[in-house]
Amino acid sequence: MSEQHDHHGHSHQHSVDPAQVSQRSFVIGITLNIAFVLVEIGAGLLNGSMALLTDAGHNASDVASLLLSLLAFRLAQKKPTRTHTYGYKKTTVLAALMNAVLLLIAIGVLGYESINRLLHPAAVNGSTIAWVAGMGILVSSVSALLFYRHRRHDINIKGAYLHLLADALVSVGVVVGGLLISLTGKYWIDPVLGLAVMIVILVSTWSLLRDSFHLAVDAVPAAISLEEIVAVMRRVDQVTDVDHVHVWPLSTTENALTAHISVADNLPFEEKLAVIRQVKYELQHHNIHHSTLELETGKQDDSCSKKTGTHQQKPG
Image 1 (spheres, rainbow, N blue to C red):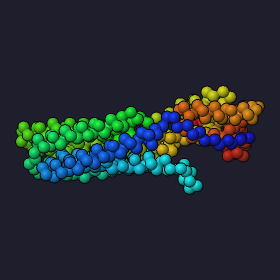
Image 2: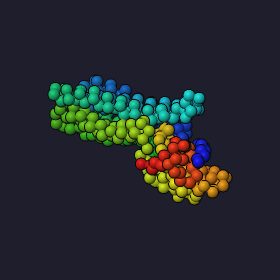
Image 3: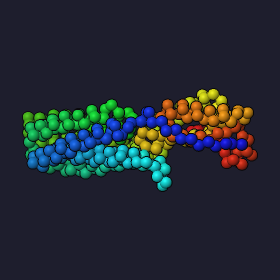
Image 4: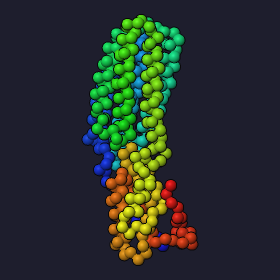
């Protein structure tokens, strides 16, 4: 015999509050980077610099990423409806996945242009490249600092921080390249810098693509150990077994869980409810924000399992 009690925990103490932190950071970051992209595109076109245009394309894709993330955070704050019972929290995951795809497209386009320019080098002004890239170091560093504090709490914030930090490092390389062009007059350095920028973007984008795809297909979030979650539930007094454990992301900051909890047959009903409440309390302190638990009394035999549709399947 089994009794099902569905309760949803709503503790958000481990998540980032978009209204208080993220949105302001994203707005400032977007403004700074749009201004710099316009400067970089203008300087790149005037000087025919593939390094500047490549970096501008990357920064433009970062602006698009920041805009998508900001939109997703705002959608995630909308209240649930009858058709979207969890609200629009999943848009934060979709934004992260789309950001990674956009960056990969940018890599392909800019990589092609850099290879073409490498085969046919053109004269560029090295000192202008160095000065503009120097501005990029400042803009990217300031923007990255906006997301530094909360980078571990949300994949979109982590993605913004990593990309902006990579931008700053890339700009350092472009400054060095611009100075080398000025000193040596070797214009092939410019497209080589463009290819180097492309490789850096590819490396930083791959982890974002992998993590966002896993979240999009409801894989167990990387920050959560399924074995640890099961152990946490089993340590609660009166819990004799745990089965059918499923953990998935509701958003980039909130996770959900369903599981079967077995307790002793002779446990009073109120004590069974207390066990459920205690399990939920423990889960809330391990990044499980919404949990639905089915209560089972003791171990069931095969015939009872068939009647209730319950199978003794272990997690993993």
